[in-house]
Image (cartoon, rainbow, N blue to C red; front, side, top):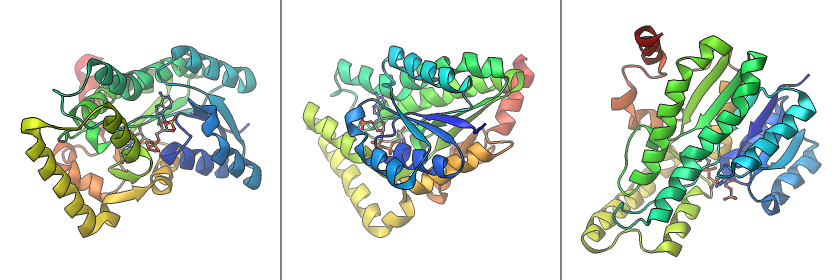
Length: 286
Ligand SMILES: NC(=O)c1ccc[n+]([C@@H]2O[C@H](COP(=O)([O-])OP(=O)(O)OC[C@H]3O[C@@H](n4cnc5c(N)ncnc54)[C@H](OP(=O)(O)O)[C@@H]3O)[C@@H](O)[C@H]2O)c1
C-alpha cells in the first residue's frame, strides 16, 4: 500500500506544489484547504496528470474540521503516514498597532493550527508505531525580524513545540519530526500579509514610520541586488520536503536554501540540524 500524506494549506504556494510533487513521487496525497472554492487549479492538475490526490476541507483554526479530515483518511486507509503542517499566514505590523484580534489570529493560524493538526494525528501514529510530522516554520522561527515580531513569535512557538515533542515521541513511537525553515518563497504569502494589514490599517505610523520606511527601503534594495538568490520558488522548497519525507533519518531542523542557512548562522552553526541539542535534552531529562 502506498504511503499517504496529509498536507494543510494546499490552495496555493508551497502546499499546492508539495501536493503535486508528493503525488508524482508515489504518495497518496490528501490535499487539504480551508476553502474548497479555491480547489480549481489543483483539480485541473489532478485531472490532466491523473494524480492520486484527494481534496479535503480543513481549516487549521477549526479542530472539528481537522478531526473530520483525519477520520476520513483513517476510514479510507486505516493509517496516516505523513503530516505536512504547511498552512500559515504572514503578518507585518508593529506590536503597538496590532489589534487583540489580529494578535490572536496570527497565533491561531501559525501556532495553534500546527498543535491541533499534530494532536489529531498523534494517536494513530503512536498506535502504528510509525509516522512523520514535517512542519514548515521559517527562518522567522529562529530569527526575529522587524515588524514581523508577532509572526516570528508564533513560528518560534512552533519550533519550541516541535523540539519538546521530538525529545520523546521519536524514540518511543518511531514518529519522525522535522521543522523546515525556508527564507523567502515567491508565493501568495507576501500579498496576503500585506493585504491583511492594509485592510486592517497601516503597518506602521507615527514614530515607527521612519523605521518602517528604512526597513522597506532595505528590502527593496536587497530585492534589486539579488532577489533570485534570496527567494525560492514553492516548487524548490517542495523538493526539500520530499527529500525529508524520503529520508531514513531526517534532520530535526533544516533550512531550504544557502541564503536561509547564512541568515540563521549565528543561531544554528553549533548544531545545524538540531541533533546535538535533542541528544542533550534527552540525556538531561529521560
Ligand atoms: N512565502 C514565504 O516567504 C515564506 C517564508 C517562510 C515560511 N513560509 C511558510 O510557508 C508556509 C506556506 O506558505 P506559502 O508561502 O505557500 O504562502 P501561501 O501561498 O499564502 O499559502 C498559505 C496557505 O495556507 C493556507 N491557510 C491560511 N490560513 C489557513 C487556515 N486557517 N486553515 C487552513 N489553511 C490556511 C492558505 O489558504 P487560503 O488560500 O485559504 O488563504 C494557503 O493555502 C506557511 O507556513 C508560511 O508561514 C513562507
